[in-house]
Image (cartoon, rainbow, N blue to C red; front, top):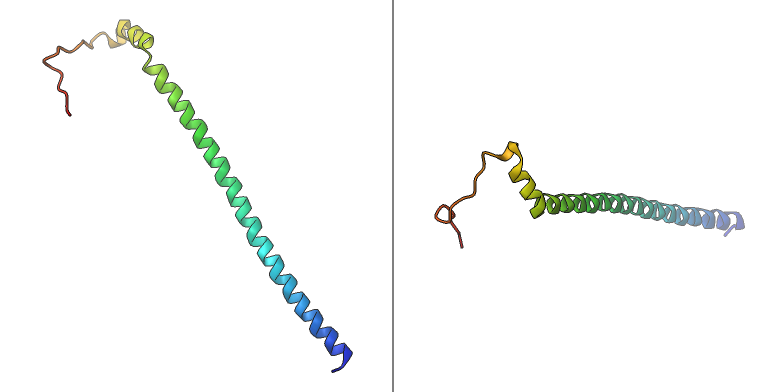
Length: 89
């Protein structure tokens, strides 16, 4: 076999191998980018959940509830009698 043909064969095989390697690296990079985006979204969701948890605790605070009970905006509300309360088990 001619040395020039051997060189061309080796070059074409090496080029195909390099192309496959680059394709795999591109796929891996895409996955890494998607993972970063998902992690950022997860961090935002955790921060939002923490904020909502804080708001819930603040609204359910007994001191806050007593202040709202004295507020004229909520003056129409009344305590329920024990016979009006239904407990579902």
